[in-house]
Image 1: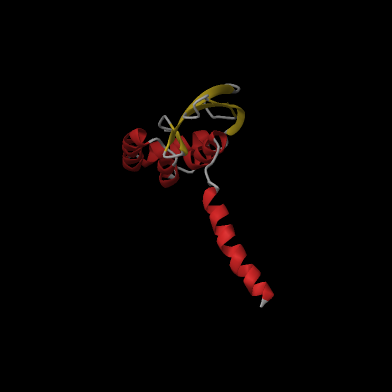
Image 2 (image 1 turned 60 degrees about the horizontal axis):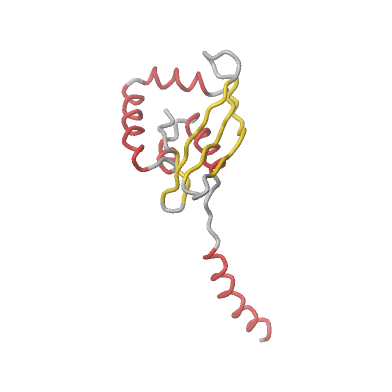
Amino acid sequence: MKNLTKLMLLVPAYLMISSCVTNTKTPAEVVKTMIVATQKLDYATMKKHLASERIARLEEREKEMNENPYDAADFILQIKDAKVEIVSEDISEDENSATVTIKVSQLKKADGSFEKDIKLIKENGEWKFDATPL
């Protein structure tokens, strides 16, 4: 009976604490997720991590890829073996925007490696890509 009373007290406390903890990803984690989704042409995942004003452009690209499967296949072949590493993550003072610098190598049709800055913004408390990945 004593254990049951403890359990009854602990469950509400656990629920209160867990509801306060957010499950949001860091900007770098969002970039990693988007890279994998882009390599797989996983549009659902890309849309989930894309700023709302950028979704329409992604939907246009999705339609183009579906209408031209050879272009989609060529795109996948170009990026499937690419290696991407996070170089840095810089969050603005107001914590509403961020820049993640990535280093891309082993990309077909590209000599050597290069760095690229990825801009993210916060929407409804979650980090979102502020550019269309395709």
